[in-house]
Amino acid sequence: MSKTNINVTENLKNNIIAAIEAAQSLGELPEGDIPAFVLEEPADRSHGDIASNVAMAGARVFRTAPRKAAEIITSHLNLDNSFIEKYEIAGPGFINFFLSDGYFAAVLKEIENEGDRYGESDFGKGEKVMVEFVSANPTGPMHMGNARGGALGDCLAAVMDKAGFDVYREFYVNDAGNQIEKFACSLEARYLQIYDESIPFPEDGYQGADITERAKEFADIHGDKYVSADEKERRDALVDFALPKNIAKMQADMEKYRIHFDRWFMESTLHESGEVKGVVDLLTEKGLTYEKDGAVWYKNKEICTDLLLKEGKSQDYIDKLELKDDVLIRNNGNPTYFAADIAYHKNKFDRGFEKLINVWGADHHGHVMRLKNAITAIGYPGDKLDILLMQLVKLVRGGELVKMSKRTGKAIQLSDLLDEVPVDSARFLFNTREASTQMDFDLDLAIQQDNQNPVYYVQYAHARICSILRNIEAEGIAVRKCSDEELILLTAPEERELIHLLSSFDTEIISAAKDYDPTKVTRYVTAVATGFHKFYNACRVKNDNESLMQARLALCKAAKTVIKNTLTMFNIDCPDRM
Image (cartoon, rainbow, N blue to C red; front, side):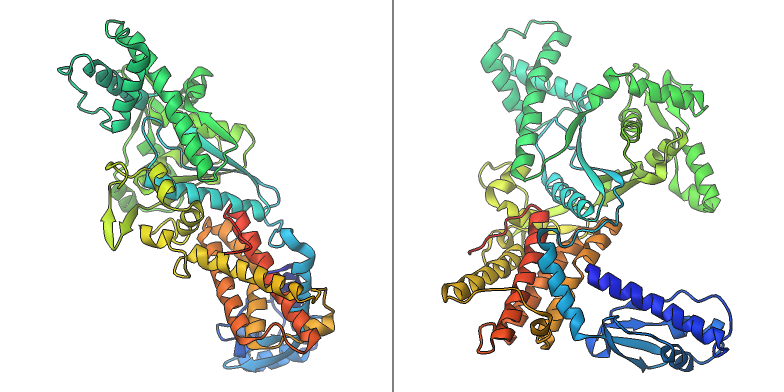
């Protein structure tokens, strides 16, 4: 909804309230609180541009038939300078309003004036938001879940930025703890096997070919120097060699994916600074831990139960959750991932972030409640931590499930995907399905250069508009600004429908930001592309009526602006030619 559209809606709401108050003051409607009512777009545009249920919503207060109440309310409406041309009372008492020609002209002028800034709003009021996403384990290559999470997280951050939030992107690198110990043991075994094939491999070790490759690279440099070294020295040397290479590979993959993080936050810094120990001490001071079997435990079951009871949940509901306590410090003295996670989120709030958003895989669903409640338990706003759970993604080709890379014969990694699929397609297609739904990513579709591929379809609409403008100018016709009198010539249904679509750009962005669902904007820009194609096929842009031609060119430029602003917001190319 453009600023013009917002003003129309706000003014109309205020006018309706003033009309009710006027009717009440004259005794035509009984005194009482004005009911909450809505103003919305009807599904069928022939029923008006804006519809209100105020008469039906107020039936109890007005103590009269809704249709009669609607007649009374509209008799007091002052619609001067409101962009409302007329109204009709329909059905049981709906009031349908029709926008004036001037409204459509005002929308196009606003888009022209705003340009690259069109679609921005101050909805977020500058609230500091951290979006943490991908955060892949650095012990191995990134996979398809990371590919989907990267596109969703980055585009979510983009819409929130456009909606007026102060957004910060962060990647949390788990470079400490149990997984790094397992990484060290796996590297050690593969390294030693180069010189003695009988060396056993850990049962729970990382089996990936990347581990073997890193061990071989290490051996190529150091030879058998570390075969006879102390175990700790050998493992530390292997990790110090392999981990930076893995992290550098992740960073390179993210850059190739056009994802730029404000910070790659290392978990190890939380341990080195004493923040992990500090948060365990804090929980202990609050009486929220206990010792058992040489380990320190967090009273997760007790805390979650108390909070759920306060929320009004029944004991039967709570029992079905099968809540359990969690280890914070293992009996070997090492902190758990959960302890570090609490410290990390405390650190985020301590850095001044007011809202935290994490994009996680759906397999982490059991971790959501205990983390939010632990944050609350240490005195921080757990309700300001929101976690977007993302379902699995499957790759398909020719309708068949694909698990192995044709190039390497190994499990497909993010880097394999980006070698085969254009980045534009990956970023767009991963944002065509909500995070909460399982997704089949069609590799054939992703590389198609036709209108079946959604990103190509949208890019083609932009390129087509650029071509129209170039051809017009090549004929010596100057594309100029239009007057209101010229813009109100755009009365064809396809013209009006496209302007309606363009006017709702910032509304779609705000809705996407509120719901943490950037796929809304992807669907929206696809609808804009469709609306443009319908308009272009139905309405001849170049024609003998110079004023009408200039108005239609203005509509073309407005559609071009919205498509470009959407694609560039999502870091997707916006070609002038295709």
